[in-house]
Every structure is written in structure tokens, then in C-alpha cells.
Length: 300
Image 1 (cartoon, rainbow, N blue to C red):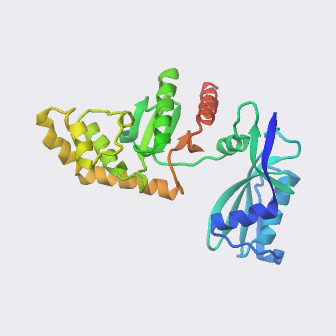
Image 2 (cartoon, one colour):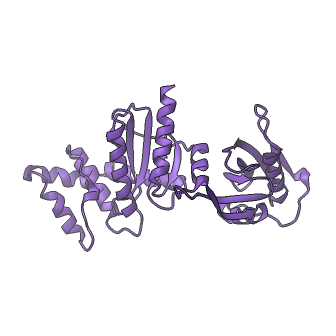
């Protein structure tokens, strides 16, 4: 059983996307000669996809191009399809997904049995986002595993802590088939997040893989936090620990991860990519579904 909890006309959605994308849309119909409609010669798209592309094309403020990228029929609501469009103007180039019948756009569709938003699942399995992964970002698992999970995370984020537990469960359940890569994305309003990222990396250099999420640093200052980890090191390792902690190498790594996240438009944590399929926020059921989907693919 499903429940529609947000139902909008295409025009309403376009106006909302205008702010998100930084693309200005006019309320009037523009001369069709100013915009071209692109589509793949390899795939014949439905009337629904073409209709949505045509409506948006007519409302673009700048000269540009609307290209149908993909179309999926999840067979949930009759007549509705998930349509991905790339919108290119002089000012911007972005891809959007619409669950639509050509007249209305549904942005939320709940399964009453599971409580899950089906739109999130459709979007996740249809979208892929490429990001570079490095061997020094491996946190758990087999680096050559068929399913690679990239986690942009913050050691002070409570939902990241919950996701970390889910990741450990997935690793144990699918031993040898999963690799989890950790990218630091310390949020500016978490005052200890950057220090914790440096501590984790310095510990790794010394052969330690501290579970940063098992500690509670609420109400503690930087000196108290550092003391927690100093107490876990032999005294003859303290100088080396602080050398790494303050090194340019670790600072550059964290900064590189932050820039990667910013380039992807990440606003909060956790942000997860399962074989390039994006999952925003804490959505464990969605993560499990995509992991299982990717594992099934790897068997074929």
C-alpha cells in the first residue's frame, strides 16, 4: 500500500527547482527557437518524458538545452515514470529527476507497510555520482570488493554514529564483498569535528584504528579530548603522534575530502555512495536495498 504525501504540478516544481539550480525560469512561454530539445538517439523515450522536457524547455529564461538523460518505469503508479533531465544554460548545468505523468510531479511517495519514501529509492538506483577513492581512505573491508561504499562523515554527527554501526553490520554480514571508504566532512557547527578527524588520521599513521564514535566528547575541551587518546599510546609514541596530528599531509587530506563534498553539493552528513548510488542522510533500509542490488549484480 502506498500513500502520496506530496503532489505538485510541474509548474510548481519548476519554480522550486529554479531556486535550487540557480536557473531563472519565466512564467511566460518563450520562443521555441531559442532552446533546443536534446534526446538520445539510442533510446525512444515515452510521451511523458518528452512532454516534461518540452514544458521545461518553454520556461527557461536563458538559451540552453534540455536533454532527456534517462527514464525508469518503477511500476508503482500507473502512468507515472521517473524522468531524468539535464538542463544546460550559459549559467549552469544540472540534472534533475521527476516522478511524473507529464502533468503532475510527485516528490514523496510513502509505502505504508515500511514507511519508506519510494521516490528516494527510485532516485538512488537511477542516479550515479562518481568520486575518486584512495587506498588510504579504506576504513573497513576488502579494497577489491565488488561493492564499494563511500561515506562522507563527521565524527561529532549523531546520525553518522548510527550509520557507522550499520556499516559494521554490513561488513560482517557480507565478509569480503564490501569495502567502506571514509571521507572526512567535518561540519562547521561541530567545534571538535576537525580535531577528531586529525586524531583519527594520526592514529592510523601509528597503526591504530580508533572507533571515534564510541566516545562522548560533549562538554569536553580540546585538551581533554587529546588526553583521551594520549592515554592509549605508549609514551615513546607521543611525539610522533603530535607530529602527524599537526602535519600538512593530514591537513591536506581533510581539506581534499571537504572540497570533494562541497563539489557534490553536500549540505549535511552522513552522505553515502553505494557503488556510486547516492543516499543522503540516515536511511539504513535504502542502504541495505542498494547493497543487495549491487551484490546481486556482481553474481551475474
